[in-house]
Image (cartoon, rainbow, N blue to C red):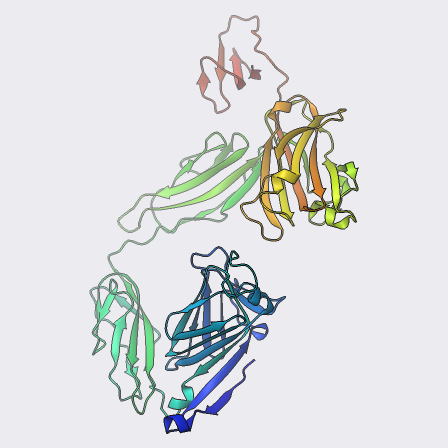
Length: 543
């Protein structure tokens, strides 16, 4: 990866010899990328990319072997301490030549033309900012700019100062713990340089430091970095060293440190709520609450949860401050499922899902795959299609509102604006041949290869008490041949009660109604209630 060069500078021009070091870094050989590919190190240099106000994050493209920074993004290159970069040039990639744009440098001078980029100056750190529009590329200027390169070559002034000695700055300890009101422990600095040392603190709200002596003054609890730095001299290189100073307040209250074992808990309405242990340091009493008592209630003292209905709630444990501990809280999300509400559930990846395909015109674009049920006319010779992916019959005869179907969509080879034009979702009752459009397919905000719209819900309340089929209508006209994947189908609807109307028993006992949360209701409206007459309690549906 490194091409190391010691070269003699133009002695005729400058009247003296000067040396330089040149490094060439090939992006396909870099192995030090961070998780999101926005930074890496190579040959002692640090590279940090950012999207800034742009729309796309920088990344390494393995297929093209190039590093890509998009419009408005930036690349900051930092050389090793005491080293200045004098020249930077890149090999623009094939893709980069299409969207090449002007580059702005934080210092020095830029020389650029179609297919080339170079910079000259003398800095330890250089920031290159990518232009907004494609000004130097082969694509139209209406396209967004890019800075894409396969290799980057950096020339430094290391050779010119190679005869100098390292400053040799080293603190005795990397970390020092200090307590407010007490003396700061000593942390001796050793150095080889004959230059004066300048001390700084990264957080003066925690501690200040005398610039000349390094004496630290504590201000407040927290963390700061104390740095010692020296400039270059005729004999020694510039140098620096640092240590972390952690300051604690002996009078500060301790954190309560409340924490649940699990951040999320999922349980069916018919099941026992699994335990979710709470740990704490505080000696204060814990008070539990539920954010949605229509889903679940919780005993304020014990944290015991009682399920009420399907839905989601947040269970919170809170403590007040004491003389020793701060106030604290912890939460977890409780999701209550009701399997009795599920009409149909399938991933849609095989014909076992019960889906079939109906062709209106042309050839069938639909197939089953590991990614879900897929419509794609590219596999058809004429690339024209008009066909439905048809669900099995959903029996809603014993279901009441709310009723819905939820599914996940993915799109490719189509624009955002074209999605609702070419892809629609329809419904028909069992035995019918004609379809009624429910809705256009939901388009994502932007397209980037296979782009997902997750867990999209469609209201089926209008078909309460009926048997229906859902049809996913795919159209391709030869010019637009989009890809449409659908998976993770879930049809839900509340089961209706055997009692459809209120009937009054022949009894002298008064009739009292309660909602499903146990609250008495004087005049019940539409919905489920508990009807109590004498010693008899019955769940009834009021319409």
